[in-house]
Image (cartoon, rainbow, N blue to C red):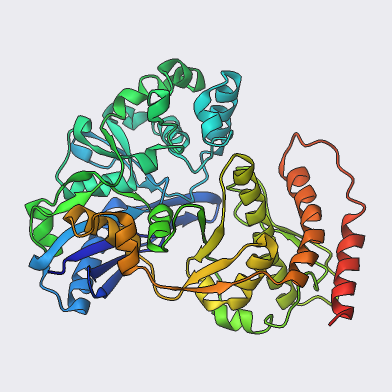
Length: 480
């Protein structure tokens, strides 16, 4: 017999719940929005309300049940992924002391720099394991920022949770810190937790960072588990709110990008690249005028640090820059240069991974943009010189559904679930001529990336950059 489960994906602006049948695939879905709190005077500020999240979850599940025409009593499991690090400090019984510091909240950049400096000075294995730089988007930096700026609430502080762990704990009525589910996915490099290194770094490290962090790991107790373990069972209270039956299993949660990789059908040596961009114009309309563009034809080279650099420099102080502008350039030229710039940045990341032994056979482009812009996928294939695959169907919340199926015992392995549920791909192969152009442009980008992006960078000569990108553009245009 087939099984019906719910897969839930908490995004930055909304939550989507989808109902899947183990044989028929997606049956229906529902989405509910929640506000993102920003401040004009502080561009690093980004918070959300726990209550807003939970109210939206109820609405999305109810909409999904109605859309799928499914009796809630037949739903066998619910799995949930979230953004991260999205951190909430709580008091006794998991009562929120504040809103979530959302993943894109960068107020803790000073705290992150302090953690990095102390970790490097102490030659901490955990910082090397997570890339050498601690980010303002990660857990301890955000928690320290909160402790520094809320002295009146420190007395009430019991623990802090990632969003995926908080929602699982609430739905399973878990309030004992010792029994809290802690996702290994979430607590890994973002919280410096590593089972092979003994868990967290020792308390002396945290005290040196700031005395406010003394004893912090004692407050972060819980069951550190991967998503093939259960967070618990759905409580009667929340079953009634959601319109499903009580007692169904809820697996330990994870971050959306990680489960999205599963939903995209990723296997060993695949890399999933999630691509999204805010714009006032629909993506197909933006892309229409650049379909005929050739590699390097604009004579522009763009450093796409519009939201800082999250990988590999991990520097939130950076901003976007375009080199080569002339009076004849257009908005379409800038868009194409931005696509090329994100492709070059992705190549920097892939090269770093491969230098450390990660073999990457193919790239799967996920997110909302790739299915709406064929040109973007062609550019990525040419820059990376690897096949780029784009799922032909909607994979949002499919990863969470797969883990819900695993919790319900519907499939013996994740791979078997992927075979049954994941859509096929449109494949974009590299074009040899375009790939050759990008082999010339990429070293120029890479030089700018490391010289502009690091305060302690060695002096670099840039006199060749503008003449070279202009020469390349002229040769490309003359060959058309």
